[in-house]
Amino acid sequence: MRYLPLTDADRREMLSVIGAKSVDELFRDVPTSAVLGAKIGGLPDHQGELEVERAFQAYAAKNLSPATTPFFIGAGAYRHHVPSTVDYMIQRGEFLTSYTPYQPEITQGTLQYLFEFQTQITLLTGMEVANASMYDGSTGTAEAVLMANRVTRRHKALISGGLHPQYRSIIETTAKWEGFGAVIGKPDVDGLEDLIAAVDKDTSCVVVQNPSFFGHVRDFAKLAAACHAAGALLIVVVTEVVSLGLIKPPGEMGADIVVCEGQSIGNGLGFGGPYVGLFATREKYMRQMPGRLVGETVDADGKRGFVLTLSTREQHIRREKATSNICTNAGLCALAFTVHLTLLGEAGFKRLAEINHAKASELADRVAAIPGVKLLNDSFFNEFTVRLPKPAAPVVEALAAKRILGGLPVSRLIPNDPSVENLLLLAATETATEHGMGPLVAALKEVL
Amino acid sequence: MADVKYSEEHEWIRVEGDTGTIGITQYAQEQLGDVVFVDVPAASRKVAKGEAVAVVESVKAASDIYAPVSGEVIESNAALADTPGDVNAEPMGKGWFFKIKMSDKGELAGLMDEAAYAAFVKGLG
Image (cartoon, rainbow over all chains, first blue to last red; front, side):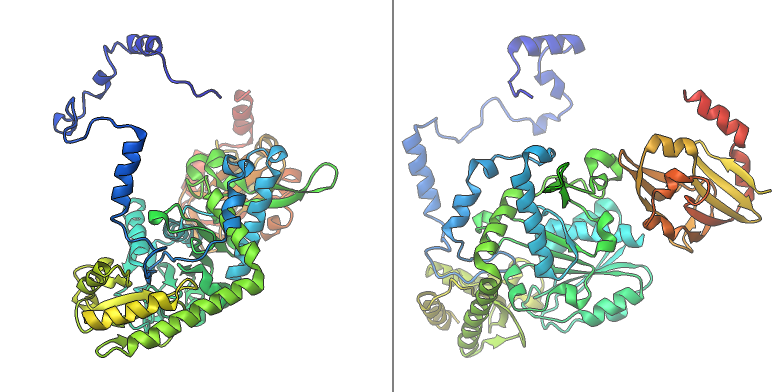
């Protein structure tokens, strides 16, 4: 396939066939109010590369970077150390530019790493089968609800108030246009929410998060049993995948679908993306799973090899009956995940999780010791919620003015709810040091 | 002798009292090629005539199977999970898909008998 732009002659020929005078004429139905004028005002003239670089460096200098400031924000995106080996590996041309591996005879490298990625996901989540990744954890969660609706032929999802608010809103958007019901729980600030009584014969699935948005760690085994007794599926969402190094995997709790945000391993923060969604389920639901799936097989000579498999679920074979319209995975981010996790190994991954928890425990102790501050968690992994004696948003602003990124005010993601106005989410990973924690605690004391 | 009817979607239904046993025809299995997976509906599921109720996957394609009549599924062929090749070997025997308790036998009138179906297939070239 060649990607060449059209020539003026090509355009004239096509326009003459359909009887239009100009390309603009094709857009005459666009209301005039939405059409940009001939000249866009307020922009500087074109500049040389050096000037552009200077201008953007000046813009960038207005940011507070996690790498250079005390940083304690989590809420679904976590700062971790990614070894430089990861970047080196994923920038190899064979990986960086490769496209969807339709042809196994020329894509064994890509297929093999995706197969290994899938294997790692099943081990982490305690599930039986994982796909070759989704765009990210949040869209993966909406896909999981759609999958549960297909499996159960029901159309009502129960959404925990412990689910990340942005994940919840993606489910709501999907529900609106796909036409299913989503019953949303109140913000589960204390981690005491019990959804068992709400599960009924119309429930397709219950969506919970572990650790929850507010940091609480739960065992959902009883909820899983209640779901199964009612013929519903339990979807467990994990936004901080490092937690699986310490916490019981959702598969062992009886989850039917597990969705994780994989950003923490191998992938940087990067203004919100690109991230990588991890998606795993039970073998019996495999054919209803969205996304690409790589399988192991043997070639004509009996040698081990890898292929895309069960493609009849996908849109290039099944068109409108496909289990999902996602047929691209987050391949390069999945590779970064796999390389990083492979470098850590099982023992290293557990150790990383232990360090995260130890750092967060230290931070929690120190912050909770500040007069007026109350820790709301009985359990947490590397993130927890504190109630401040005053609204959290201006406190975070005041900390930012001191060049400290001191957590996320819950009101930023759950606005107009007085019950969460004073709540602050704080996260500490292996990257936290005394150089960050000391100034944060001191500044908090000053600001409160 | 049981009465067998055929649909334009290449399904057959064998009628015994209120019960209909449903599968795909010889022509359909030839068109599909080697069947590798069959997804059959669960018992007690209520289906409407024309509703997609099962899926048959072959090495060539994945196709929906539509209910030729309305009713309630009373049994499905669990053996197909392990031996989907039965659909190729005996499409009108061991390769049946599911049994249905018909809610309106009048719907059978809209289906073809064997001779009409043979002519229909011939017309497809």
